Length: 120
Image 1 (cartoon, one colour):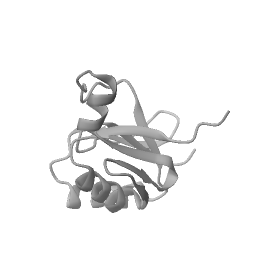
Image 2: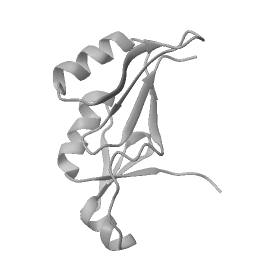
Image 3: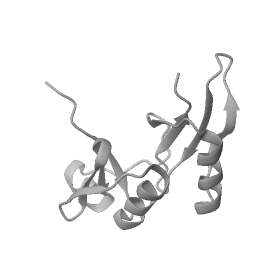
Image 4: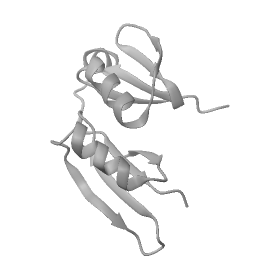
């Protein structure tokens, strides 16, 4: 068995596609009308479709998981994030852990938690 993708629920799939392209360079591989597969295995699912599948409300900003990315030039990434998406809500601004790794944690447009850290 293989883990093939990670799916996140989004309110506006086109805005999220742009967001993940702008910040992380992810491109669309497949668009199935509300179910979009991006490079690196990230899947965007339209909230309305997800609600119909599970018959429950989506709980945004639930802090139960995160998407983790690595970036060598994290300072340049943070500058790009602040320039392109100045209304970003942060869990923590750029910091350095005791083991030397620099990280920033924030929410995407739909409250999905993202961590970007320097490679270890």
